[in-house]
Length: 111
Picture 1 (cartoon, one colour):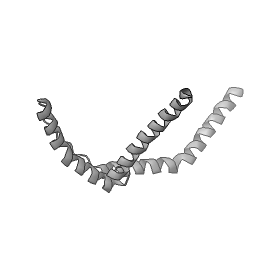
Picture 2 (tube, one colour):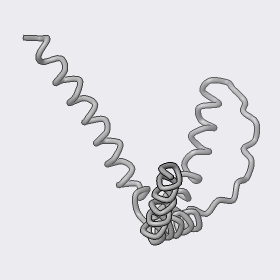
Picture 3 (cartoon, one colour):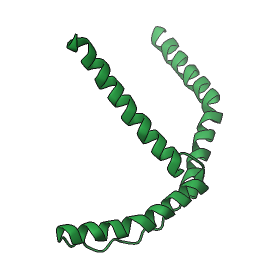
Picture 4 (cartoon, one colour):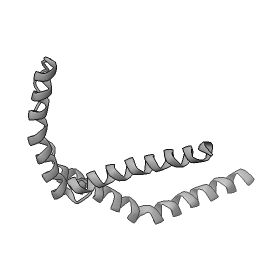
């Protein structure tokens, strides 16, 4: 009986962990548009340094200074969406071109 239940429990645990991670990501605004991502990144930038300092004091460890990185999720989101939409828009003609090239290659081989 336990041999039948164990796989179900393992699967349920994995689904619960994945669902929880998805909920946390959605609740934090990570699955929204670029503006919501920028807000979430700002909240993370405000929350992480105090937490790291607290852990450094707790474990008596010193870390090097964090470099300042300028990154805009809004720009990255927009460029990713633009590239994806462009790839989808040229896909029919690209597939047609590749098909013609493949047929021409096969025709050349059969001559």
